[in-house]
Length: 101
Length: 348
Image (cartoon, rainbow over all chains, first blue to last red; front, side):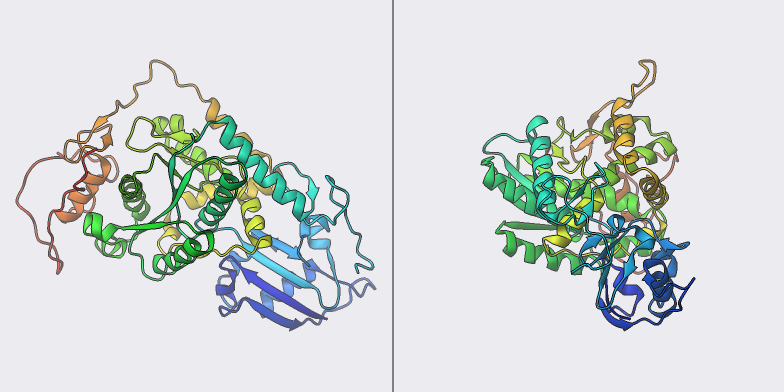
């Protein structure tokens, strides 16, 4: 699935200082569903994009508290957080709030 | 075209698609309603707490970071649309931290142009003769924030005095204040605990300071900046990973995830603390060396600076009872030539 991922608020430093990544995510079908969810995407990102200090990005299964996630410019809390399902050409933005103001 | 995904409508206007979930109210609202609610709440805080009077010269502590950029933007806007009649300035502090402050200052210079506000930059090097990089080289990686915080407060006051400001505003948000309340409880600092949750502080000092974002969630500030495409700098200070505040922050963030309202509740608890009348509190006087307000013979900045200049980096840190204010011959230390420099030429 083709997706555009953006990292902001300092997170870009964890992925080679690149803010925007156009990626093609291959995922396994689970339980007969062929949907990619945010949960699957996070796992993919941790393995494939995060080059250092993964604890700055994720805590357990989900993003570290203080990291905001937007799917197509919409707060992922509105679409079920980890259960948010993703579609072709979606734009996912990760913004860290954990820095000085 | 959403297809399989359900689209939630804004719970306030019901006309537009909801874009975010407000932690403060748990409302699911669209961008436009969010901008209005965000700006209006701040306006109400300013008015109900009587933060400003017409004609005030107001210095905005601007670091180029998310809070101060949004503060400058919103304050400018509210000043215009509600006609507060304020004269606004950007005031920035250069601590001399390479790879952090030099980049964020570029952002402030851009903000100056973007928002049309005059800018004043004060530097530790000019004021104290030391950059943070030099200080850390001397003291090591512990207690960095103690030096920086103390020096910054004074630096802001001096910059504000230079600008002939009546008030100083900073972008401290609800998360920051909740962290501070927790920190002071963990450290048993009753004097600070009683002051830290006030929206206006230092009214008996050189320049009163206020925090219009006291009840504003950090998440909302970031979302506002993101949607409005405001230009800000976002990297952690290179010396911060060792700071004690990090633990309080981690805890607050975990709490927010479980119950977002907890942040405001902690602030409310901070406001409601009552100190027993039998508790001994420090009395406020003035520093003998520079005249700044202080509860000790010398203000903290003078103590720390004296320690640096004499090569005694632990002076003023922890609970040591070293005689302060004794005139001794200068000790030279390492390769840096040390000149004892007074805290400042300004009389308070």
